[in-house]
Length: 553
Image (cartoon, rainbow, N blue to C red; front, side, top):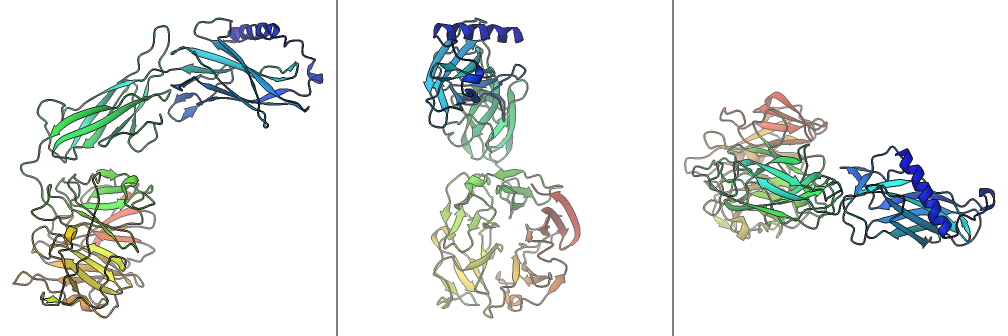
């Protein structure tokens, strides 16, 4: 390589002589004319996340991809004397080894000494060296160190396969279940040249936008040494599913999007579990990760690895983060819903709207949000129609907390308990999409503001309960809401929030978050879970026998 470098200096000198540039005065008389910086645009890429202009003889040259008119070379030139500055660029083809520059051009620098020039006509798959000198009047600087890059302007290609969900033939898994999808890319080298090879794949069950050539998105997977990658994805819909995939090569070129179409049959015996969001028959704990994505962790999982993660960009708020949102789930609208997975109620604190996600895609949350309408139909303590109390708000903006309580109206239909103005309100017995649910004011003393609500769901006998952590003391209260002989529920235990202390030590500082996803250990009784101050997920049998599952993501 050193030999080639010496020959390029000779080639550069020949060009300079032809242009009458080597008659420059010695360095002491040229006013400090110099080149202070050289870069190519886009900056050449060696691998994912690694870029270099390779301005020395030992660095591995990076790749530049499709750029339209050609790569742009940049330099900053300077002089200790006043006067207009220019820069002369020269480019050599290292693949052919010729001493003759394949490009030479001069461009005027701006007021800050910045000069740039576009280099057209370079050959796909070839490797190049470039050099720049500063010009001022009849003076020419010494050349800047050689820089190097390789060029790949050919799009890669990609094919997709799945043993569980083949493009043709019978699937071996059902909608809502996870299958393996293998992406196989090709990045053909042109005759006499090289290719940068596939670096990663971008995939989505939605349409892919225009690629920026990066491999850092949430829906990217790196290519392995053999150029393939395998991902585990859930078939989100019964029937036809379309997975869109692009290959990205090291140079940043994106393949045309490949649409892999497959059929996912419905499960003839689908699981039906309250608290289950992803359709696997096990209730889920929903928690944001450190990046604001929403994690689904099975309630009986041995650790904190999520079995599904919803990207933060799907969150229905301006921040595009699930972290600040109140999320409640337990039940789905019976007779108007498939699969049998929880709908999600999502509320932004202080917001007048309550988002309702009708969960038709096994927790994928890739469909459209609808709005849970605020009901205007109220009931008294006996369940008889009644005029709504004066402090009943017309929207959801007064909701401080909400929990998915359980099947008060029977079946799988969801119901909510909200904390508004220090009192508890029950919303149940109708389709929330239309505001057909009935509203009942459960308490009137206004003394619930100092409590964090937890809804554990039904026990094996169908009885319900409400749990609450008293923030001032860390005491845990459990208020029974037994099912009566006529099928209705007795809410009288909710009259006094200070009653029914069952455990202590659950301080806000130690456990910022408490929740329950129902019976996790199979003993017929609901169980508590908590998140510690250092973001460990802790589960309990009931509210005892603490089990630390480890750190959350």
